Length: 580
Ligand code: ADP
Image 1 (tube, rainbow, N blue to C red):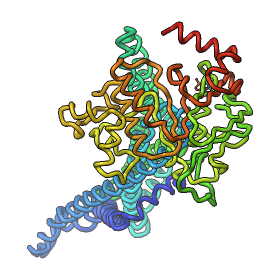
Image 2: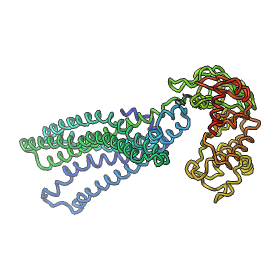
Image 3: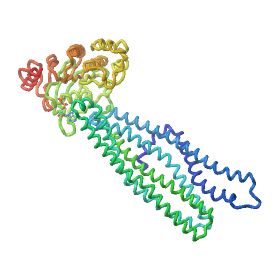
Image 4: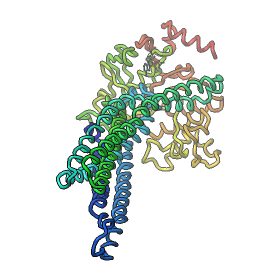
């Protein structure tokens, strides 16, 4: 069980001194509480009660009296320091694990991220790391303190067994101790599975939150409020059920151990009476016994938390151990600036079992504006996504300038590609920083020049703080056309020979439309461009058109020849013209 947590203790290495402090104070705490109290009762207090002749020296009385606060002070201070340092190491582990998790998310293939609900992935990064931190802190905390207290108390009992008359009594008490371990074991086993269920329900609840918030407009537009509340209510209800299953077992542990302890004390009383054991021996033994049960109780709780932690580790590791399907090659071909001749050679690709491209071959010379046309679901986006290696061809090869994209470093490949997507994503930052994304070395002049080329400069200057205006989450404060122009300016700044353009499906207002079209016309000049075309106005200008259907290229040519010679193209075109 403990081995499950081993990889995460790695994060402790950089915090070795705090961990050692935690362990030291934990040891001190254990000894002062497990051994200290019984020793006081048995050996230090009796002279106070047995009238002695001659009476005790004043100094001795003071010493005895002072021993109580001293022992408790030691216990309190060491307990406090132990907890403090344990928490400190705990939050540092948490930070480390969360960073690892986040780092991993940056590199995971898109196909993995699409398979998982974002809410679930967030929940793993927040709730499961928090559970892991709690478990590890508890382990570092009670994992030292409690066994030490138990050892201290057991040590005292054993010592008594060999040195006092009530040896039998002590041995009986000792016999009861192992019995209390039984419920600990039973409960622990019950908890593992239920903990995993609970964390997954928690992920479900987060997913609902996220989905609902990102569809806020749709919910209002379609009047889905009560449906959403019901769906959320169901998920929340399932979480409650899962939580209560854990509570049921975890909470039964303490009473079970207490009842067994009470039985132990009852038996001890009986033996004490029969054996005529003295009061101070009895009291010391009972105290030591109590000090044994307490750690067993806490170790039991620790054990159930370890099980919950193990469930969280499993959930984290599903992500952390997910192989990075798309990585740099071992010996990358050195690439600086590509010219941009894209070729597909018998490329086949499937999302899981459903094929999206079948044996596709195409050659797009450098500097060509190539439009991908076809009905929805034909494979246009998939085709374009294979070029920057967002996905990996299942068979065949995608090459640029004759170099397989898999033979280049990802960073080299992607540096040569600019992307303008349908709905450009802006980060909640200033316009300036949003423009500068992906062009870390660009000067202010270059950024302003790119904004001018993209027809963005004019509207940016009209914003309240100009280039320093913060755009809101996902660029909420900008219109669709403005976001498009920011994306185009970003693409200018990349100076990439290849451009992938996912055309916006929805028409923009006519002012924006004209500005965007003009900016795009400037942007495509001199680059190899793949346009995922939704509107035919752009397509007519393309020097090459690939018509896709059901994952295959069914025709290729320019507008005039395709319109005359390809029925699918003609029907798609006529339908669009009719629709406008
Ligand atoms: P287009 O861009 O022409 O509309 P796509 O390339 O997006 O077509 O999709 C091609 C096929 O692959 C479609 O049948 C679509 O349903 C499927 N597909 C696309 N993306 C995914 C995905 N992430 N997971 C599973 N199937 C997908």
